Length: 339
Length: 103
Image 1 (cartoon, chains in turn purple, green):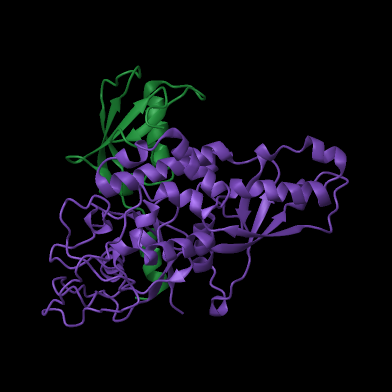
Image 2: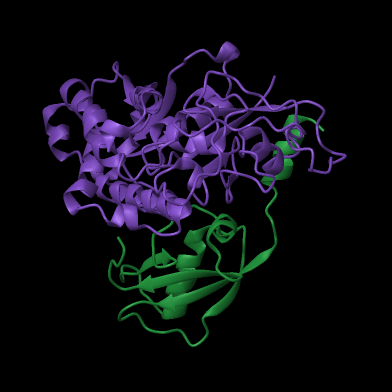
């Protein structure tokens, strides 16, 4: 229940939820009907990270209808045919959270000093390439896709989807409504029934004498021992943390991410990334068992961006799953190259 | 190796194949052969298209696909990713139905 969620967890969830990204929507002027005011070709939005492109259309539509289109064309305009592209022609996925689209753009086109620059996207008013978008661009298919991701995350954590399917219909709909309305309390009142919780009450992990470099920063919740099976919502008792790695211009990598490794140490972002991307991340100092790859870099060549934040590599995967996941339960790790 | 070079290495498509096993749900027709080796780098969308072809489904005929009787994956996820996370005894089990089953 929300009332029993630890304060630190609520704080991180709130920060992720409240995060917004600046977007400049440019309208493809070739597709504007005659009689439109072409001097107003850009529209700026501060979009919630947890939102989706189809949910931004209403706001863009109001702008377009009030200021750009004349009355006759406004009447004929169908938003069903609208779709978005990034500058340069990359198709933007309707079913990926806006924050993920923004972070991926940021790692693929890094601005000097990571200035918060608006992400320019092109709105097309006609002929959506449905075969490439994979979905009919509509709010309903976007909702279905969100529910699919939520269940996939649930299945990864617990080996079944009982937590999500066990919600009443109005609660399932309420989750989506919480995103549409960008209402933290409405969303998390329901989501806290399915999201795992880091367990700060458990005793901290005893430092392992064989790995003196084990970092123990005080800025994050202490590690926990593998808990007993009785703690059904503990982030450290899941089978796997739902995580995807996004490389600039692809591919997307997904694998099983247990919260603890065989040697009993908590699985960290460093261990995870050096195992999945050994050409970019040097072997973790806390993993003495891993044989050193001769191709392994001497220092890290890349960084991990999670929810717009460059994540410290000693973050534990279970903690990321509980505190830094998106509304669909997935931790999206975008990889950028160090300059 | 430079970072950019490493990224290019990760972009290369894996030619490995994995076994996908199709299982009908409800009234959906059963396939005579239900084991197929599919290139792991394919997107799940390719699996859906393959299945539609095998079933002789026309454009617009309803077909719902699920993994492990539990959820519908995103069509742009790769077979490799789904296999790594959800394979059972060396098979990725794909259920198909003509009606929404676990929507």
